[in-house]
Length: 399
Image (cartoon, rainbow, N blue to C red; front, side, top):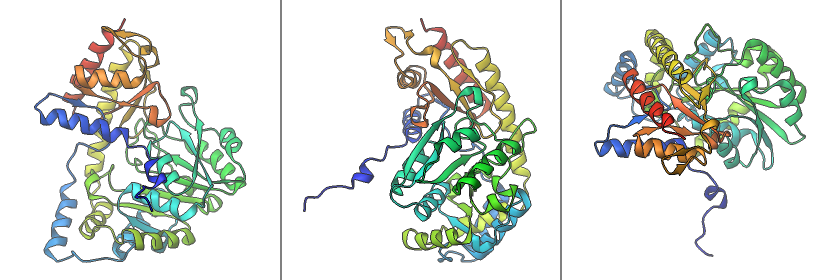
């Protein structure tokens, strides 16, 4: 047999966010003064109490295998956190600890999908959702949500997208890349459709601790027993606790789903890192002061970056209500020229900004919107100010 490669594997798109971030890091390594708006991780250190818990775990020899789906102490902490923070009733047995948020989602779709099952994904979307679904032999069904509806799917759109092949719907609130947050009323209307259509909702709540302007991050599964039975809640330690490199994600799911996820993980990766699990127990059960401090700083940066965008030509954005991204409509720049170069698409714009202005932005064609870019404010205020100055300089050169 010829040494061929997996067709499914070869069809996976590389992450454009990681590619842009890698380009920015390479330029920085050359000594260039690069501003990177691509960051998908907080620029804060992991809280000291969490780091100290990890050190104690090492000193105490907690460096062996744990249960494949996570150590009991962490499952208990996750279960209690779901009840305390989210109003969700998941027993420890319904909780699975994974190797990061992406792994949690991978477990979910491998557990619930059969070949040809459809998964409804509102657009704009985090670019990994369709790829994760396809790797699990599912079919992404993209539903476009406009700026006029705050980039949020309506109950009517969700119902219209459902077919006899629909297995699940992905909900991401607060959202990457838009920063939009679904209200309790909006979630209740979506929950009614989900229950009526008898499908799963995979609720990605990784940015739940980062909401602003008095907004509330509501877990859709908390709205009643009927919707809870259809809900798989996904979360992780990365964003709220500045623990991106620790690689701990977690889920709460109906028991039958959790059991299948646990079985899959036991063969694919076995347990997550034991030391990171011990640190995560401290993060969930210890002081939350660091989370509040990060949120306050992100809020200041959000306010500043929106002031700058609102004052610039050719671009506009809806004020984000959560996470640490601004989803910027740059459609008015398309067709204009920078020097002798036509801005034919957002990729050209991003290339000019990184190469000529040493400023990295994320073009959002892979997020479902080819005329938008994403700016992360998970960088210092000094870097944001410098980067916005450079973007403004670029825009003022367009003709």
